[in-house]
Length: 439
Image (cartoon, rainbow, N blue to C red; front, side, top):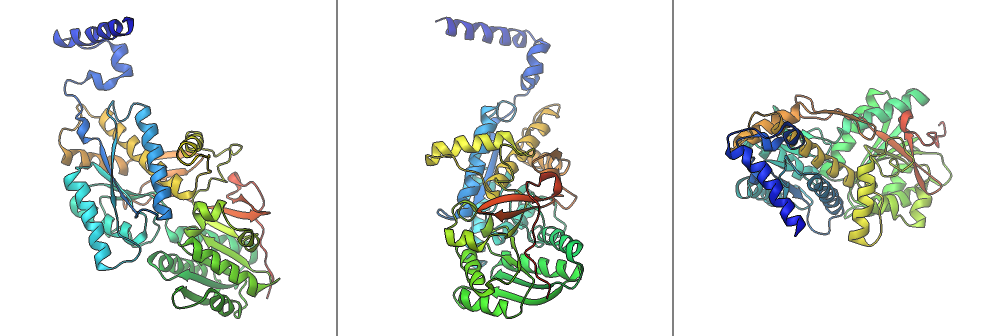
């Protein structure tokens, strides 16, 4: 009874000044700025669309957990200027880049833009879907934030509406080979091994270009298709070249493990630096659920990534506390036990947080909130271009005129069954080790 009476008194206090044509008390509008506006915010505009992979796809499931945790935290903390953020999901294309798959991405994005009337998009789970979605976003004039795909071709030429949080493949490979040149000088024999997919080719091209720029000798370039070549045959062909460095790029965790196990058999005690580009090497199953045989095969493996849960341990100076703690609680409720987050969890979470921050900033900075969806999309696009943040967890977040985030990389290395951050120096938990033999 007292609670109901208190609510009525508060309502009267808020309504009387408005009915009388007076402003609300400054102490009220300072804490709740959206109450100071004569024109209320239309909460139906506070919507985002998610392009996601099919059910059962590991990357898609990890991204969804990141999105849902971010949504939970956003709305628990007041939403967007007092409105709950709403998410709408559509399934993107399946793996591959066929015309039918591209059409599925088109239909999914069009449904989000025209039927669900979202203010912005996030996605996708694969490189082909992200490329198609970024092009369509420029056609439909709606901002899209891409969390995880790193291929150079994904953002269209003369892009105005696409934003990518993930680092470019060229940036990731470039940092690795610059480091190798610093350690060993030029002329190190390098072999690139990659899956025969859009992601694999993007990563492999970037690796070769970076290796040649750093004056390495690229002696082998192997596209792997499990349906055509066995992992044992591939490993034998690779090791016949006696490489000193093997740069690996796989999005499929199962195939990545097969290739690593086969290489372990062929190389024996020969010292080879194996460098794995995050993708299939960054999933929960690979990082945390690898078999004993795989753990033995990946001892000293160097993982090129943008982020990892092991790098973000509770003792780390770069920990994103709200994410780590929230993810543990979220996964314990959903799966029955707390999990450490992966790159895909983290990038999806951070991308939605960036979008929510941009929405809040855009609306709070306007004299009156947007009333038309077209205007909201345009203002949000400009706000994203102006977005800047520096954090210990992610470093600099800054989208250039082309929509590419200026992000650095991290290196993790497997020591005794545990992943340790080894680069950059400010995040290092252990010293980078090169299992390297001069040839």
